Length: 291
Ligand SMILES: NC(=O)c1ccc[n+]([C@@H]2O[C@H](COP(=O)([O-])OP(=O)(O)OC[C@H]3O[C@@H](n4cnc5c(N)ncnc54)[C@H](OP(=O)(O)O)[C@@H]3O)[C@@H](O)[C@H]2O)c1
Image (cartoon, rainbow, N blue to C red; front, side, top):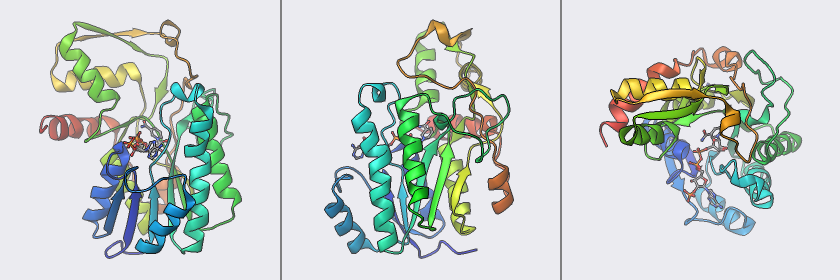
């Protein structure tokens, strides 16, 4: 176990990213010195600029939330997605090793094909079916292959939270304007609140965890259930109509089932992630209504 107080964390994506902003706040609340950075502060694909940054800051932790996250657009921009999701983390890991920093990197439930019908563990066979999923998995695999021990890879899913738009935020805006929304009911996952994920990440750092961990809120939902719960919780008058994925074809394949199992996380931290429904209430009552 270590204390985070006084530790220095460079948070890549910490100024503008959905998760990065929550991580910056939470690590700071644990007493860590956080340096949130965005694309204006450095060029992620320029090794010299990254080296200069790390030599200047000498961080204990390099927290990488930067990614190419546009799942459909990635199908047309494979090279760009590969650079950010695969090449970039590998550069970071090499530099982390050189500077004796721990690298914390985030991955996704989209590394799975969704053919299972019980929660995916860290050991389950991966089989991504989209460019986004493939490039994120290649990032994970290459990090593991480097053989640098001090790397923590966190697979997460279906993020919502303050400071940046996300699925729940968009649904609540649409619901204000329409009487009825059609939302897919045949994709099931693990909705996850970014402040919770950030706190659970901090707990993994305290526990000195390395390797791959699934970290999500507990429970499962379809997009339709998540939307209906959010609309109900916000007290908006709008019907949610369940529709199949086939009625809304997207460019990228999405797994029909990608719930993540968090037993490994629970075992090492002693913490059971709280249910997503509870976290959703915090988001709607505390974050959205304050805006
Ligand atoms: N969102 C989800 O539902 C979800 C689900 C599973 C896994 N994840 C993973 O969780 C991590 C964080 O996701 P997120 O939703 O917080 O991502 P996000 O909000 O889309 O943030 C990504 C960050 O990457 C930066 N970025 C993107 N392209 C860049 C480029 N070319 N150069 C420099 N910076 C660039 C963005 O900066 P700008 O703001 O300047 O563009 C932003 O700070 C990612 O690894 C993602 O794969 C997310």
